[in-house]
Image (cartoon, rainbow, N blue to C red; front, side):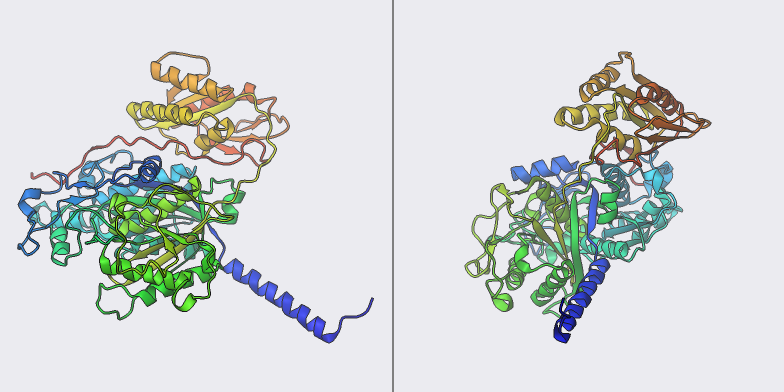
Length: 631
């Protein structure tokens, strides 16, 4: 064998160094998995509701409800009228003054001073963890980061307008933005980074960026990222009308010639993030993957609140660079799309510059147009939570491989050079085709903050050979009898909608992904139809073999339960479940659960379940919890 020439050896050494550098760079920017989501948006109490709204092209904007303010007192069609607003519309979610304070162990007096934004954030964050199959009580002492985009101060403003004699000890902790994140960390007992982010309408997407950075730097191992907004006071509406930011027609006409401003809206969205390799190793339900993100500021534009197209281009390019992608690989862009003539034209021109067919990136070869859309025509502008609404929309579109229709586009904005831009807007549900679906999400704040997140579809889960267990155990629990009954009803509806769900995945997720509460129900079933029939029996109050109910006792001993291929003898605190022993041991485990034992499940051999699955979340029992009443 002849020895390689010095030139060939040098080239080989360069290639090896290049490979090492690329590996190190990849280590610095690992992909981040979205493993859980929760939402409460106008017209959508759940993720399923939200997708149904998007797919059907529904408009959830309504007239401002009477529990906010006297609309007739503040409304005038005359934009110059002092102290008046020229719009009557917005996007709203229910239960403004209702909250399950007892569930979160918050005293009624403290709950009355608690900002409805914090109440909503607690509920949706809990739901997102449950949707991820992550038991909140298991996060005690864990390195969990909490990142919350929040801007509104309406409730604090209302409480401060009271007589000073009404101020109690909870006003500041109930309304300061820092405690929105801190309260969630305190509830979970987690010890990772915890912060509130106010970057105006870019807040929640900046929070996503900071959470990804924290995960990559291993400051935390799990991140809860949220955006929340509540509209309670008319003063901000009046202010925005004086600035002529709001739509007089009461609709967001993003990209349309009739665009005349945005529509204020409220809601909450939360995602749970984890490093992708760890999520796959833990068999989490990966719902999408964040490849990269970036944030920057407009600098000195033509005005404090005027967007800067060059800065928008820069933040998108930086996110693409971190994702190690070329612009032509992105097939959909969820635009900020507030529905202002100036803002829309600046944003879309920036997109054209980055994604080809015009400007500095003219050489980019796009085989197909870049699809663009915005969620704001559907549900309005959620301000601090708007980026999260767009992100969750894209995750759902990735899962359904469908681009939902963009609303209210009748005559494209003439200030946008559509003929020269490689952009196309879906006006009907459109199959999202391609070898790899990749999307970007934009968010810009009137403070000058910009953020961009790049994400792609989840990898297919790896199949593993499972053992055929003849019997399965489903455990459910709640704080109250009505909540337990409603939870059973939700499971019945879920199984009816998903009759092909693997029963092992379902039981594993329910048993390991929920915090055990005092009122308990255990059901032994050999199949999904058997489980569904027994859930019906519970609702009908009909006794049946394999159904156990009870109230947990604090002295019940904990049990460690291991799924194994081979039978092993039990001990006082441990059970080993093989296909041969499960039918004999699961009834005793079910009895222990309803008596109050905390069960810790293990599947180290990876022989029982494939992956966690999305299941019904807890039905909160909300009670009126309005402002502090006068003494």
